[in-house]
Image 1 (cartoon, rainbow, N blue to C red):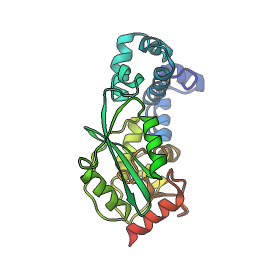
Image 2 (cartoon, one colour; image 1 turned 90 degrees about the vertical axis):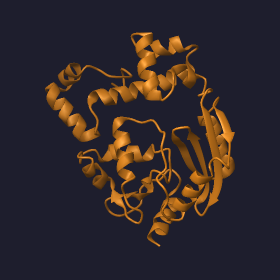
Image 3 (cartoon, one colour; image 1 turned 180 degrees about the vertical axis):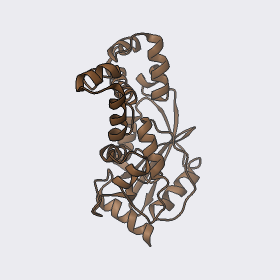
Image 4 (cartoon, rainbow, N blue to C red; image 1 turned 135 degrees about the vertical axis):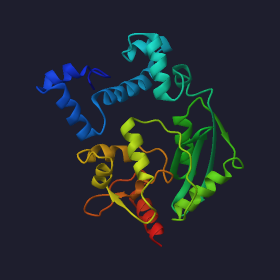
Length: 256
């Protein structure tokens, strides 16, 4: 599927590895937490993103991404990208995005929000964070609005020092399995941790430890989705996108 850039019929996959389609389906879900079709669709979504960035037109991107029809491309791509292909290819030019930045004990925290919820929360240095934001949302109508984002930033500041905060709406795109992992992370109480194995078991897929780790690594909404509460089975801190010292500080503040 990686070579094909998208879904491959289960019968063909099963034949290649010498098992029944039913066994393939069961093993796939057990190891990765998603079906073969869901995995293939996620690959095609990634290929679609790349095609929209590099192709001369949306029509070229449709065929470069492996879609058999333009209609299918628009219907599926719009659903999985969270916007139409034309909007995405222009850098989400028509999507109004509010953003704000605030100082916390773990560094500057920058948040980007759509009308549906948080699309990005980053931790680091303000200058670097703004540069990363403008690169990721190139072409979008980015508006700094500290007043409109007051409640959001208050909640993020509270989370950064281990205090309780209202549940923040999230607007991020991911695979079905990633969404399940992120939902499970939000259920981990402050002051507690879970191992990657614990999270996999909670999802009913104990063999999908690596997939859980990947979902944590791809979390774009720090603090609001508390991937810092997931640790290795030996109790040590695994990699954290914003740095192990930030992760350690967050966990210590939640225990205080």
